[in-house]
Length: 311
Ligand SMILES: Nc1nc2c(c(=O)[nH]1)N[C@H]1C(S)=C(S)[C@@H](COP(=O)(O)O)O[C@H]1N2
Ligand SMILES: [Mo]
Image (cartoon, rainbow, N blue to C red; front, side, top):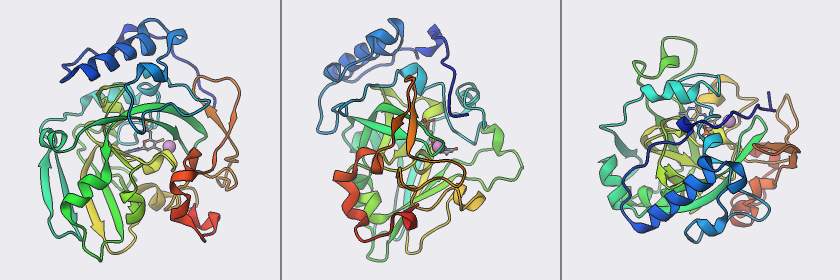
């Protein structure tokens, strides 16, 4: 289950070019085409091909996972538990119109249309490691902005201690939401200090193009020091709460999906070790990094807490 077959690249792995607003994006798009698909893996995009930003550097010892892999090996329970089927099934999702509401323990709740959202906040590129609790990982060049900008706009009250994310519920398009055992919609949450941390990202794109449907279009959250289930897709509501909520996977199996989901090589999953991981595209497993390699930035959030209590 943890070892995957590599798909053959086809032209379908290249999404059609889109209109880019500025030259920076055109350059990135070119790098993507060279690196991601047409010329094959040998010509993978290097960090120098990606325009710089404070967070845009490729982590030491890592290389970008090709676009074709990021967009064809997906976890998205609303569509399928088959990672390869998600890419096809998710195309049924319609993205327009789409609005995001920020509500709950805030002084200035608002609802914003997705188009306006991208006008409000400047988009930047950031390369993050992405680690699933199942033991595989990737390196993804996301585009988006720090979630804290969106939250600040709603002015959280002093009672706001948690931030909950609610994904779309639309059984007519999300085929696995047809009546069954799962507690839809998908819900995830962070402690407010985690949600306000500048690494926590509201993501609208990857590889310099609009976010593919299978990766959570039109808006998802990415929390790079936590297991992938803490990075919810297709967000419609962000709710600030006084109490810690129960999350989707946590409700289904609390022993396997804790509230925190911090990447930690020393805290095994009940059914497997987390000490090593399978980086997609590599033959040999590599050691799992504490907080997925972001300890320097975020370890202070967990000072004095027992690692196991943070699972
Ligand atoms: N709405 C929603 N978000 C979700 C999931 C899901 O099933 N539904 N799966 C999560 C899990 S377990 C992982 S590993 C990542 C996968 O993201 P990717 O397909 O972009 O790699 O999405 C997360 N976000
Ligand atoms: Mo995952």
